Image (cartoon, rainbow, N blue to C red; front, top):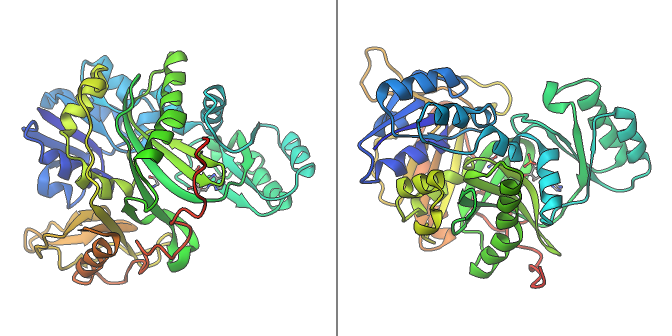
Length: 437
Ligand code: AMP
Ligand code: GLY
């Protein structure tokens, strides 16, 4: 099959790396791409948001399957457009992608499906939101309803703090139209886990789980980023818990979407908090996670083309998905200054080294071009590389990742030292999940 991936991050390099290993892939293009995808596929100079460009390229190249990485083109209907042109595309339609693109929609679906989540209220009127907060005590979370590049969520210790976020959203419009509506919800406490399952609109595959790290600094300090690292499996994740998440969260939501006439086909990503009362949903995403994909793609034992095709055709129950369980740790190397301003164009060295226990996935890294050596690579973004180590235990995988990181260099490179260190943050499952859920 001729396959095209849409996107240019570490997630898309990991997808390209895994798809390239499928015997069913005869040609692979990446719309966007980076220096890493260029090693396993042909990059096309089309931005992921350029839906017309993707559709045209897929048509003229005779592509048999398009795999969409980022949420924005999904929410904008790239899968609907490709399907209309008769091009099979992996990912949800615009209507189904609302599970990520509208947090209030997602909460309503969850309420309807009786999926466990925080208490919440939805407001478009600032005064009503402020009145609600004035009667409220304790911490809350204020979320812009729409897509806000991961910046739309404010964890507020007091109702006063929350009022500031509400005003910034609904009056100052700091998130533009994404913040015309806000969701105010209960602040949940516990251990956070990202859970992933394929769906064909009716069935959900076996699940895989990973933890990610959002803050820039060691010990989870400092501002949030697009993701500074990840590991799999979470230490408390087991078959019993996977079954609870499947039955109480994934399957009911898939059924509710089908009932609404917007069947969800693609990768369903549930951001969960394992609380004292059991797993609760923080958010749904309509795509693979970044940087979780970099640690879960090496675990995908069954054929990804078979799975994605089954999702599109609605026969996932005949194509069982198998995940391995070996530990993987991914350390993200970023440009110094990120998530604030940073320099690009810095040469990356050490990429050539072979290491059986590590894989280097590229994100903000591009071929240097010009008349230097053909394989010269320079930085082009904030998050530059995800360095994934594997091992028979989390400490071994972690050691493998950091061994490989030590050989990679670019000016002002920065990375967290504590990815995969379970003593940091709440990643050991502080609460034991309640068997009654
Ligand atoms: P989201 O964009 O919804 O994933 O939110 C970003 C991050 O905010 C999540 O990964 C959580 O760490 C945190 N978060 C979101 N909602 C809640 C909540 N209700 N309680 C506690 N933390 C939350
Ligand atoms: N790992 C967070 C995300 O992909 O949204």
